[in-house]
Image (cartoon, rainbow, N blue to C red; front, side, top):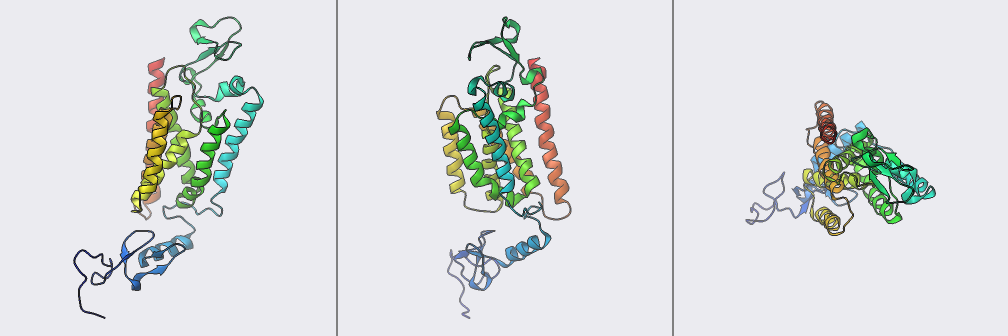
Length: 305
């Protein structure tokens, strides 16, 4: 082996500083020399990441402590199935005039609807023959969740479910099923909470976009934690937010709230260090996020009441 030192500015192996290294570990992105390179499914991994992977495989757990799913696509397909079922029932029962839609959509304040779509007034001026549909301020708190499974237009559900189909199994495999579901539902609730605070009082909001943007936020946080290339994720996020604010009628509140909620949930899951304290810290973080959202919802209800 040569005694010469690497040229200044040339990357060196993190384990052998005297050796030039032009390959990086696929998992941690640290430079590794040929002696430290271990073949992986894609690229190479360093010895530490190989040992960590073997340990996780033996324990049956993901890198962040969740139980490793035998089939990471199952949870995603169940979520897609629930969304598809609600969409089908709504379209078979009147589309925009469907009673199920009226009860499932997120509406900050109660609303009276007449016999014709769009014929409405606030609850204090209900006319004979009109039907009162409650809003969240009137106790319809289920709408904060059911609205995230509600779609009318085929393009709306198709775009949301396509992203969920592509990204959901990956996050499920990284986090584990329970943690992935916590990410999905807390992101959905975060999006609905911002809608409740910032959308017009009688505006109806539907769609899984809050949860979908939460998955985007989680992808960003996980990439940052793993020191991965952020360019593709940032392009995806910027493009979707550009569409959100460029096209009227899209709920920017749901998208932004879901994104921030998903990023917060992912941070609570991936930043606690490995060890016996990780699970309690993750639980405490998720619980704190849930409590903050519930308090915000109750405060908003008190203000509207």
